[in-house]
Structures are given as structure tokens and as C-alpha cells.
Length: 465
Image 1 (cartoon, one colour):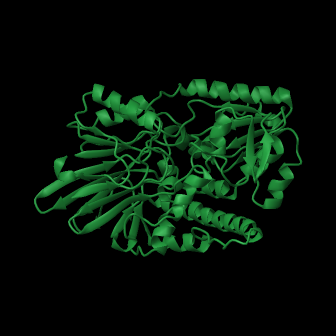
Image 2 (image 1 turned 60 degrees about the vertical axis):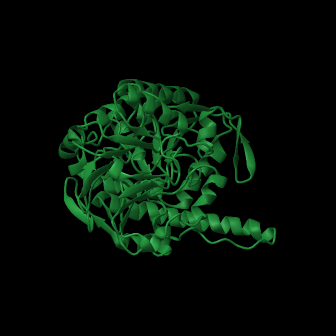
Image 3 (image 1 turned 90 degrees about the horizontal axis):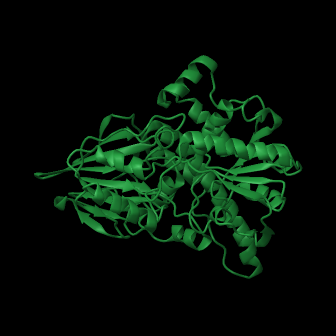
């Protein structure tokens, strides 16, 4: 009985963990590696395990760094079930299909370049059809429902409060007389965040695999975040430009629309056209609308009394490419929310191309930016960025909104872990080195006896936990 780490070790993306119990092998998450182009090339590598040998997958949530290689796993022989929350099934159908479409477009673009250099063509990592076909292997389970994953392994999903359908995974393992409880935090939400409930407490565990994305910092209070965002919008009103918001289409996009609705009058948002320029984000918002039972008390109240909590009087959903291109003819008065959240693909790249050099424009960064991404370069103060083999001067003002996070900070992580009885062993994943080291030190100060930072391929014998 053991666990082996094949992703999100010393970095944030590519979550993938193999749990072995007797002759049963279960994968928890199977995420894309995201970041620089050279980093993302590893998504084409062979799996460090035989997909045919995997009996089942348990998926924490729909974000691609957790779900994005599932179609590849299936292409290479996995035939089992993928267990997750029903809302995650719905969101994965959108996200994976969109990723497949983008893979096809990227392959087309790359093959034009390779053809000029007389190089062999490449194939997409997976196609849109392969992504949609993979959904047939998904099975949805409600929070707090006990179900069997395979012989000797049962599972319960708890609300992680990160995005709609996100789950803490509790696995109970039995092999002969040995019994162990293994808990995966997934991505834990930021307590007090709008729309969703706070992360569910876990009562017991023998080993906790816990994220450490923001293990080295504390988020500012939500009130300060709203004040900062309001100031950016007020200044943009005076500058007579556009505001570009690269946003993760699931979670962050809905949070923005919900917040704009709440502060509509105070921030004078009637002066703007608010455009959601991402078909995937539009579809994901429609999924959010279908699951009011997962909302927190405030969002449920809005849904009951006023209807759709994501609706705005001046909201426009830009679905087609033609609609998106027309936005670049407007030199002021538009707030554009577009993917991808780290500026590595999607329509935001086109909007950056047309707006990044205008000093009257503003770029509002509202999410985590991994190393090597265009978004990270903007946050770090780059004077120019490269888009489609051409450099563009960064004259627009870049604002990083602090505290607007779907991840728990150091205090929240420690508080959530501290509520687990018996001070179990802890393996820190899904965090860059500094964040994981800082959280490790804090947990040790808190009295946790065994804190590990697994490296890629490391195996932990659960009999020792």
C-alpha cells in the first residue's frame, strides 16, 4: 500500500498521484503541465506508469492542471471510471473540449511553421472529439456520499470551496489487516470568498496530501481587495481606455461577474460595456447557474430573491470570433474578461496585441501566474512581451489585484490541517519551492511531526504513516 507522486512536485501544475492498494491502482488527478512552451512540451511525454494498468481515477476538480491529461490517459489505454462531483463532470465537458480545440489550432499553426522549414508535422495532444469521448468514462458523486472506487478502496468527496464541484478526496484503503485513510486536499478555497462555501473540515487521516500554492503568504482582507479593484476601475474611467482582465474561465470569471453585480453602482460600472469574451467562460457560467445548491448563504439569497447572480445590465457575451475581433476596434469604455488566465492562449492574447502598447489601457491580473507564462512576465514588470513571434511594448498599466484568490493562504491551510485529529503526516504538493518550504516550517512550528515535500517519482509506503 503506497502513494507515488508524478506531478505538482516543486511546482503548481500537472497534479498526478498514483495510489496502490494490493493489486488495485488508482490515479488521483491527471493534470496538464502548464507554463512556458518548453515546459508544456512534457505533456507529450510518455506517462511514467502504464495507463492500461490503472483501475480508476478520482478527480478533485475541473481545472486543466488537474484534469487536462485525462483524454491522453484514455488514448493510451485507460478504460476505467473517472470519479468526481457532477458539477465537475459538466465543467470538464466544457474545459476539455475547449482544450482539444485549442490543441488542434496550435498544431495547425505549428505545422505551418514546420512546413516552411521542411520539418515533420505534429499532431494535437488530443482533439476536441477525443475530449468529448472521454466524458463517457466520468461518473458523478455528490459531496459526502460514500462510494467504492475499486476493491479495497472507498471514497468520499467533501466540498473544497475552490471552484464549483471542487472536492477534497478522502480515500479509505484496506489491504489484508492494514487500513489507512488518505486525504487529498485538492485545491482548497479561500474562506470568505463569494459564491461558494468554505472548505469542509476533515476529521481524521493517516496521510494528507496538501496543496501549498500560497503557503508562503497571507491574503489581504476581502474588503481591501474590493477597494483596490474599485480604485483601478475609477482610474480607468479617467484614462478613457479599456480594461483587459485575463481570467480563468472557471471560478475566477464567475467571481468577477458576481462582484461586478454587487458593486455595480459604487464602481459606476454603468459607464462601461462588460464583455465576457470566451465561449468556454460563457458555458461555464451557465453551469454555475445550474448548481445553486452549492452556493454559500449570500449567493443562495440572491438567487432566490433576484434570480441569476451573474447577470448585469450592460453585460455582453461574445461567442463568435467575429464578435471578439470587433472588440479590438474599440479604443475605450470596454472591460474585457477573456481566457486564458495566464495569458498563454485563447482570446486574451489577441486583446493584448491590440491594447498592451496603449498607455490609456489597463491590465488587471486577478489570478496566479505560473513561472514562464506571459501573465507572470507582466506581473514581474516586463517592458515587452512576445506574441506570435513578435515583441510588443508594455505601455498599459498592469495591476495585480492582491487577495483575489481561489486558494487558501498560509493561515487557512494551517487552520484546515490543524482541525484534523491526531496530527497526521503531511505531504506538500502543488506549490513552488519557496511556498512549500515556508508552509513546511509553519506546520512544524504548529507541532506536525512529519512534513514531507515529495520529489517527482517518490513513493511513500503507507504502512509507515
